[in-house]
Amino acid sequence: MIKNLINTKKYLKIIENKRKKINIIDRNIINLLIKRTILANDIIELKKKLGFDINDSKRENEILENVEKYINKIFLKKIFKTKNQFENKKKEINFFNQIKRIYEIIFYISKNTNIKS
Image (tube, rainbow, N blue to C red; front, side, top):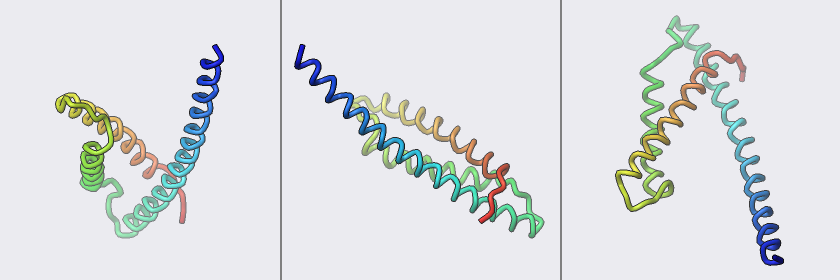
């Protein structure tokens, strides 16, 4: 009984510490998204001055390809390590698809949020 209580307290402390780290990461993500949006807005303004279309599906695809390459690179080292390579590939594809959805939202925000540098 006492051992269970000690373990419970220990695990709750670990959870609390991990949540604090997540909070720091969340703040960093928000700051990076703001910086990214500002840079994208600067590019949009320059494209408008040049009379270019602000939508650039080629560039968006290039970004997604870079993200996918990076995911492939880190996936092999850190994420979902199992002996079943087929299962790893399925998880990797699913992970990329979820990240791709996030990037589609980031692209939307970049085009529709006016933040100046």
